[in-house]
Every structure is written in structure tokens, then in C-alpha cells.
Length: 481
Image 1 (tube, rainbow, N blue to C red):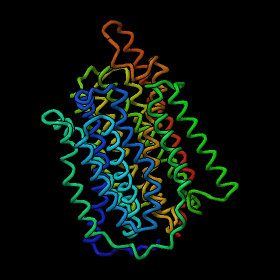
Image 2: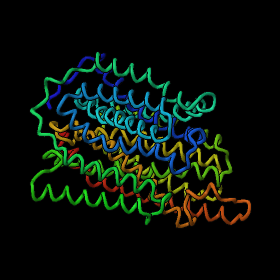
Image 3: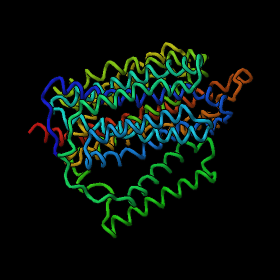
Image 4: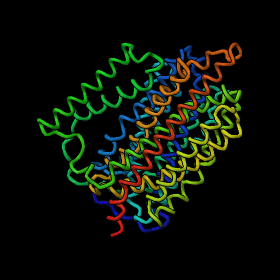
């Protein structure tokens, strides 16, 4: 699709505001609901596994939505699709607030996920579509800053609202902001509906198969430890994902019906940038999952104390993003991506050395270091990915970035849990049921598990740095010529 580059400073700022607002909502919604899950479980009389579906439905629906909405943005225009996503999110948010039962809430959260997934995808696409190339890092920087602020605000907001009012007000309070964003986007984003190319036929079968692969994989990885890797639901999810993958391969090889647009992955550096993004998010997802357990078990902190310490990560992450984006516009993405992945790897390795101390101050320093590293990484890497993508497939290419992020999060939780379980039998999910006062050696076992997990983080980030060092060069040379 051909897009008009916006040169007016005020219009650029309005575009970036919509992008940043979408990123803020995505993270704010996720974090504030997560901290409110115990309250929801009590009021809805739900078990731990049942209440997890509130988060799983949201993330799975968003993951399945990314690519279809990217294609839809290329067909119908970014503005219309973005506003439609805002409307879907508003509808799902209202239904969530009014849900009379757990499973109605789960369904409503899936509708929310569809809306927020579309918003996130189109936010990634709007920056390179409408901003000059020397401003894309600046745009992605504000996107990542807003995501960090969403994390930072979501935890205390969700905690306070759930405590002083009903959890329903978590959703009610979001509605005015979502409605404002939809109206603001409608009146301020460029109208690109007339610039779209003749759309390819809609591939409903391909979409169904691709969605089955993503949904089944997400459910399998997310619930594997709770339900057991050899349980019937997990084996069924694996079988569905494998069957759908075989069917997609057959359609592509025999009937010549590829789901992705031709040439989408042909840009030099595009696939490596997505792989690096997924690897980095794998480590971050694992850290976000394990860090609260470490603070509770090894540092002996309460839930409130752990939550306050964990705010060190978004506090460091949020202000770094815009600066990293602007720097990427000046010096290129590769040096920043390489330095961020290496710095994060060193932070994981050093923290592993001090894991057994159970020192909250060292944990704060580690979270600050990781927040700074991740803030430095994401904006330049997003800029680089879209530089490597073909202009005709910007929406579809942009959809693969949040897809890689979500996939990394799911894989990270599963991988870190698996490695942790090698040092602490039963895994992190059993920590809250363990009385460490009865046997002090259990803390040593837990610390051994944490040590193994952060060593894994070091290895994964080191692999990401090697890929960036060896595979990013060709595209950067191409961009300079």
C-alpha cells in the first residue's frame, strides 16, 4: 500500500499520540488485571487454573488477531482498521465490566484481546507508513515509553481499584479513555482508505489454520505445568497445532496457497530481527514470571513489597525508549541492539552469582539494569525490522512484531519454569504451597532453580547478540547506500 509521508510536525505528533496510547492500553490493561486476579477469583468462586483463563483468553485472542488485522490494515486502510479495533476493545471492556459469571468474563476478555491486538498491530504499522524514515526511531521510542508507563501504572491502579471498589471498575474506568482514543484517531489520523491496492482474496481457510496453530500452542505452553505436559488437554492442543501446521504446509506446497503475502520474508534482516525480538522477549517473559517468586521466597518479601520492588523495571524502561529511538535515527539500530542484548546477558550472569544472597537491593539493581537494556533494545529493533520489510506489506510485516513478542512471552514462561524445575522439583507453581520454615534446605533448592533459570537467560540473550552481530549487517549496508 502506498502511504503519504506526513511532514507537518503537529500531525506527526498526533499520529505518535495514537500509537503511544495503543501501547499504553495494551500493557496497562494486562498488568492491572493480573494484579486483580486474586480478588476476581474470590468473588467469582474460581480456582487458580480457572482464573488463569481470564489472562489466557486475552493474550491468545490478541496473538491470533495480530496477522489478520495487519492484512486488514493493508486492505482497508490503517485508520479505519485502527478505529475499528478501538471500538472492539471498548465493547469487550464494557462486557467484561458487566460479566455475571467467570466464563462470560473469559469470553469478554477474548473480545478485548481482539481489539487490543488490532490496535497494537496497527500502531507498529502506522509509524513507518506515515513518519519520515529519520523519525521512525523517535516514533517507536514513544511507543515503548508509553508501554513502560502502562506497566508502571497498571500494577498500583489495579491493586487500589480492586481493594477499594469492585474489580468491575477496573474495566469501567478504562472506557472513557478508549472512547476518546477512537474519536481522536478518527479525526486526526490520515485517511488512507483511498490509497489501498486491489486486495487479494480473503483466505479464510488459511486464517483458520494459522489461528489454530497459534491458539493451540499458546494454550499448550501456558497450561502445561498446571495441567501436566502429558494430560489430555495439553496433548489435544499439541495434536491440533501439529495437524493445522501440516495442513498449511500441504496447502502451500501442493495447492500453492501460502497464507503470508509473497515476498513478506524476503527483506534481508527481517527474519533475523524477528528472531532476536522473540529471543529477547523470551528472557523478559521468564524474568517477569520468576522474579515475584524469587522476591517472595529468597528475599522474604510480602506481595506488596515485591510489587514495589518490581516497579524498578518499568521505572528504568519507560524513559530510555525515546532516547534510544532518537539515537537509532542518528547512528543506526545495530549498535544499540547489540549493546542492549550484551548488557542484558551480563546482567543475568551477574545476578545469577548473587542469587543465593536473597538481597532485595541487588534485585532492584538487576531490574533497573534489565529495564534499561530492554528500553534500549526495543525501539531500534522495531525500526530495523520495518526498514527490512517491503513497503507493500507494511501492515502484515508490522503484525509479526507483536506476534513475536507474545510468542516470546509464552515460550519464556514455559522455558524458565522448565529449567527452574530441574533445581526445584515441582517448579515455581508449587512454591506458594511450600512451607520453607519446615526445611531450610528447600530455600537452597529454590535458589539453585533460580540460578539455572538466569543462566538460561544469559545464554538466550548471548545468542540474540550473536544473531544481531552476524545478520543485521547486510540490511544496514543496504540502508546506507
